[in-house]
Image 1 (tube, rainbow, N blue to C red):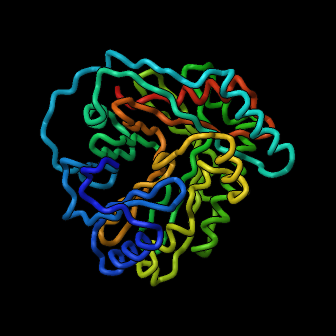
Image 2 (image 1 turned 180 degrees about the horizontal axis):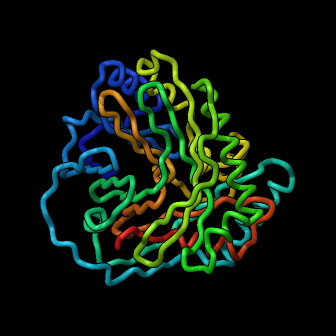
Length: 333
């Protein structure tokens, strides 16, 4: 965050303590946690300053904001990593997979973006399940739920699998693609195991359902699953502890998680920061949180979009490179 950001950055242990305290006293709060689950923010809702940070989730009211005109996107120019530079990273990941060190690795890279809109204008104009704007710092326009907690029920919705909706029979194509099937099944198994660390009666409620995502470039189909479990009656006393047991999110790391995180660190060669971390809102009773994908960051006046996809033994270089670029979009329509 910028130096002017008015909220203190908390360590992992500070975040756990603060989130446990706020949840146990039924105090509404908003939170951001970085990819490595090492740092973040837990801000009481009544202390949020809309001049510095705003969010809008599908079940949370938008923060008050000044009405501004919404100019159209006239410019959306990308400077992605070249295929030549992407290939060694892809090859390293596949080498690790073939050596048996991982089954699935989420490989991401930054792409420079030039657009006529500011971060705030993109935030105002976009439609997404999880929207977060931080002044002069970052923008999240994510379609992916991390976990929801309603009563004692906890649910996760891992998203794995993307295809251009304009492709003939696109839904049938992606649902019958062996690579996509294997990748999605691996993540569902990982998330089911993760939820079993904190909940009982874990089960897959829906497996590989398809949603349409509208963007400024094209319509995409994304494949998700729903996994649920039952938390103990006193879970609010340990809400922060529970969330950190599930991090980093399986859908943006891979399996097995610990070794795959080492492979990602070596392969990517850049700092994800808050990209692929989580954002969330606790309303005093229930929690809704999203994975921070579809992520724009402002660095020294330059906008950088971070994106990627899952690599398996069946992955093809060109397809994975094209998916990385395909995901550089904003849901403006």
